[in-house]
Length: 191
Image (tube, rainbow, N blue to C red):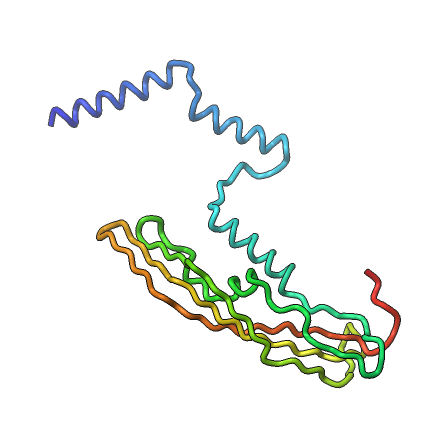
């Protein structure tokens, strides 16, 4: 009982001293944030977890780099060779894997991929005949389909409540499409 009384007395003294000492740690911080938001005509500072900001950045990165279908200029010559030139990059293959290695809790369940080896194979390379596509015009659809096999060591670690590490050799297969349009005729596309 005396321990609780001492703790209550110390807490009361700390609050009374900090309020009457002229120190504005808590109220000063809030006042600065509100004054800054009034000056810059914005909301007060809101802390954002790095996990959520990274998710937003990844969404924009994938949309900018991999989410659009390019429309290429016509290939000169009647029998000009058309073949797939751009196999998927390592970044694209790793981003297309099922995301089992993120979102783990530090020290509780961490999953990592180590010793990654990627094998990419072209499985489809064909060109459809010329037809009309809205917002593009007459174009051929060039199908480029790839099979990417990813070999890696999947390591699951936990430090609490029972420390353990499990490493398993894993193989994942991902199918990627690099379809693009090739215009049939007309002037070059302005860049």
